[in-house]
Length: 85
Image 1 (cartoon, rainbow, N blue to C red):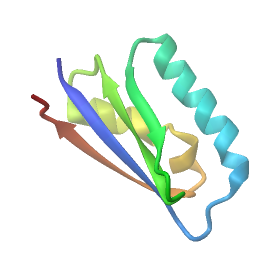
Image 2: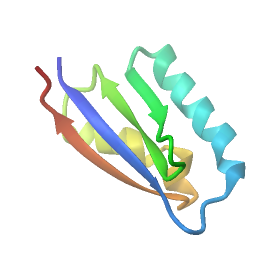
Image 3: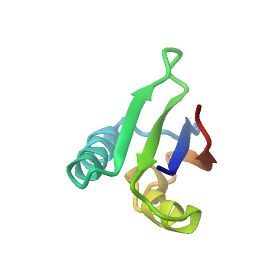
């Protein structure tokens, strides 16, 4: 199974109003069995989520582009195909 790690680092202009739409986005991914894991960093600088059941890095990038964090420019989203052991 391919996994894609998405690091979501908050920008100085981060707006808390984007949190609820972001959570709804993650819940929708979970409902489609595309979300493996998610969570925030304890220092408040951002968080990460792991996508599954997505075939290519390009497809993962398209999914992440629809994240409200990306749409509102609140966070820098970095995507990596993740090889786990």
